[in-house]
Image (cartoon, rainbow, N blue to C red; front, side):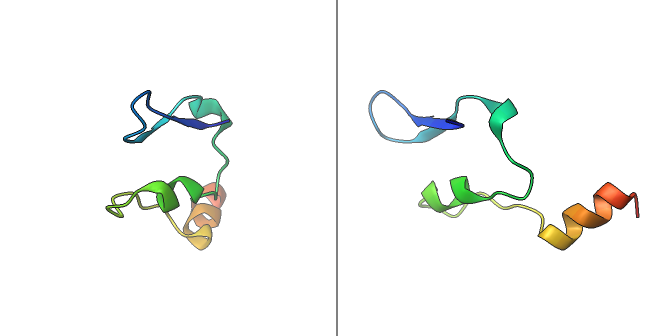
Length: 51
């Protein structure tokens, strides 16, 4: 997996950053405060093109 719950179960931590998938934002659904944000797929495509 990419992330894991802390031992006390109070939060999620990224465990293996190299397994994150470009364009995925699933971990944001685990944040009760809505503190995680990600670029849109269009922004990612633009960055990959170098525009």
